[in-house]
Image (cartoon, rainbow, N blue to C red; front, side):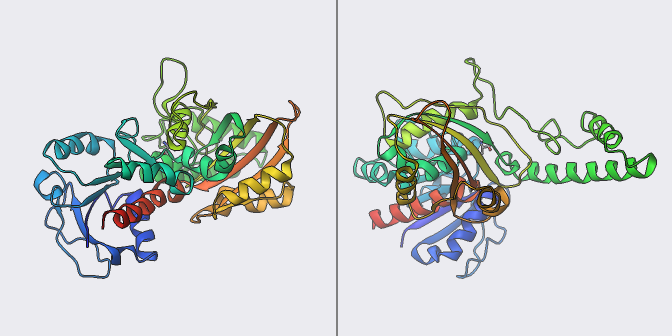
Length: 372
Ligand code: HSE
């Protein structure tokens, strides 16, 4: 059995990965070894085959003994350890949740329901680094990948509604704290003066804009608010999160010349772990909605077209409807006023499942199968 080293398995993405691997009995296929950057020698997780002490994740020697390494530790760790390990002559497969290796010409961004051809080509040509994509990109491709595959898309504008989980576990906690604090201000405000909602709102807005609200992570209140900027600023006016859309989508699809333009504004909203996106799709030619729905549904077994009705949209197309699930609903599909070749769509998906852990879990199995 292949020795697979796990780093960062205790973090949020790592924990979701561990849970999914247990659910799917994946640990039976491998010899797992658990690493740590801070608790060397402490007992590792119990995955049903006895507990082993944790091993130093900064040791090239121990990592070098693995056939595969799966890192959910973050880009700083990858930056530090990946090149050290490669320079030591290690030739195993490196699977990573972090973004650092995505730009490398010697890496594949993995999303096998969409790009199993690219993954197979990578394996055949000796590529050893397999990296999960940005969550909004992976979720958008799981939703409308069929339209890309059929070469129907001229461009896509994606306006995102990204959950707190994309900013990390501490940010999810911070959102909850902010909601609680706002609830307390609201209670005080109601008992203090009147039940006039405009007065209550004034008190809450004052609080949201003050330094009294907890905002160590976001820097602002996400509760009762939206934050129209995610990640760092680039010279062209895009945020780094927005830049990833076009680059990663084209890389995942294996398009090297004449990239499909994708752009939009990435926004953080107060949902917990599901990213939503409103898409404007410019088709290469007009296509009836019914045909588009069929192509979308046939693309993979997780995507579902939601009828464009108020009831179905509100029941099936929200973060709360998809949280913790692998389903990818796509709805609000209709031809837009701009012309017969413009289509709108709305999709929501679990940022920690298809947005992060699931593509890694699946590529691990593909690589194991191909290397035995
Ligand atoms: N960058 C994403 C976000 C999460 O901030 O929501 C990881 O892909």
